[in-house]
Image (cartoon, rainbow, N blue to C red; front, side, top):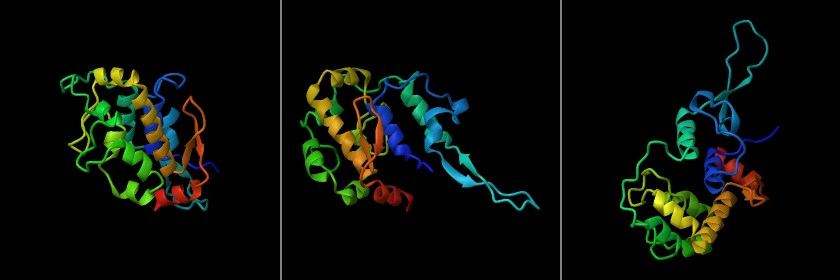
Length: 201
């Protein structure tokens, strides 16, 4: 029986390999199809009265996860930048020019000292929006939304792209997954059993 990949990894994979998937992403009306279905949790279906067979597993859809994934994969339709285009906070963070707030830690320290420190990565909830910024405001109000201009500048900056890939691999390892090729395909890492069990706790 195959094990489901956590939703966090599906979103991270989408961020790192956007545009590389084949075909159209699923719509909100068909969240049971495609990549959304693969991370849905399952719950037992109650058996009918008088039925002696055991209940079967039925997908339990998350509307919010499907909605967020849809917005991301469609590049936030009807979403307008609300920051000045010359801010570039996310790019400056990835160029190791500024630390992430409120912790005051630079990207190089995160990549060199936090890698493999699963307790730190688990306890700290402020870094993730700096490592993987979105075009909408998250829970860390110090983190800045990504602008379309910043995205284009980021893609031109080899230093930032190199660090982004390292950050992505670090988080995949945290979840017990490894990147296996340049197209974004992932597989179970050596530590997958321990890490997957941790996610289920």
